[in-house]
Length: 276
Length: 327
Image (spheres, rainbow over the protein chains, first blue to last red):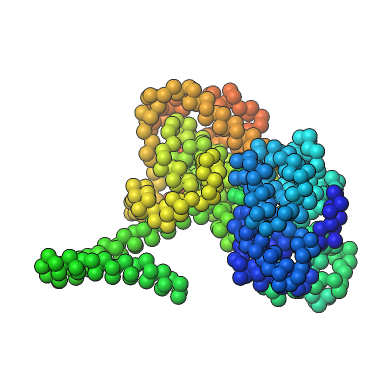
């Protein structure tokens, strides 16, 4: 568990729900809760916020797991930032998710010229109790610096960024840590591209610990204090991904994985947020 | 495959049968021979197939044109990351920069008749694929300095790959229905431009990329007659400054490359305007911050010992890249 700067406790691993329909999402989330996952991540742009809400209800009805036991994250989109009706947006998300609060509400992108005013509106909503924690996503150092120097009242609790062995974002992580902001890493496995699967360092660790490369990487995330937000549509892999407790990476092994960094970005950030 | 067959039955076979039934009724009632119906069917089938093939070719050509842009779909298929250099610009830049041939990790984001406004939008949309301290080349030519109007068809084209938020402030749907139709059936949605593209490609194939850099295609030398030229120039300088600042704040190196024209090929009036605008740029933009390189675009055609167009542009690109990065 990770303690956020406002006292809220966040699970150390999160399952993403991006791009899944009802039947797939139900399988994935049910497999998740069966294997101990309690945190799920969605966003308005994933076009399935309402489906996540349906499955949360199903989990409560069929598995007997109450809403309070789950940790739900959703995000505010660029279009919403431009429109400026942030108060409405949280109500829409609450309605979609069929809940009366959201555990973590993130600003999906630092949309130029809008992200600072948006943050100030998010602060107001945080005060109403509709969200337990507020955070940011896809920020770079210059965005965070601009935000923190703009007279904000609340420091973001979480920063979610693309982070994996091929992109360690050390400067951003350092900046977050110095401001007591927890780091969530999305695409934590970098979609297991060949550069990772065939990497000698990781293959050696795979043999040494008798774990899959995905498990080695997820352990690297957890030991470095990041909260990986991973996506899998296979219940088998979901079970495998949480099974990382039987071993510990040595500090030199963590450093060796750090050395794989080549600032490889899987996603085109500026295509998701023009002018990023 | 099963889904495709179902779609085919739903979208083609059922409407064809229904239309045929209606026609059959009409023919029976009016007493025309049924063989006419068969002929109509054959003609419809022939022309329908032809339109389908032409539309498919246009979609292919557009997709090929858009391959240089790291859209979410393209980028995931490709392993290359952290590009060393990208260039913007219009027709000339499109023809002159050849990174593949020069073996430089770069992307040519120029498009025919691309204005500075769209240069900025493209940079905004895709800049994150450039490495830290990577180079952004903005070629300045008569085309992007003197061209005034952005046609509405340009917007339709750029809407194919730019984020809708960049193009409009009031349409928040990320991919509108109209755009989806445009992407799938450009022949129907944007007939004139689609045909122009088809004919242009056919012409290039016929001439085998002949080494002629002509007066910018579609550029009308009298396009400035009705406007205040100096104020237009100032507006463009503001955009250049904006591009420069954009690069600076994102740790990218901005380079202005002036692609000069052979004076003899230009109309005197245009040449004068071009030179005056360049003077204004030099006065407004701090040359210490910006590397400014002048090149006569037709120099590319005179590289000794090279006859192949691709080879010449590759040599030009490599020379320019080395100069920009001071190798």
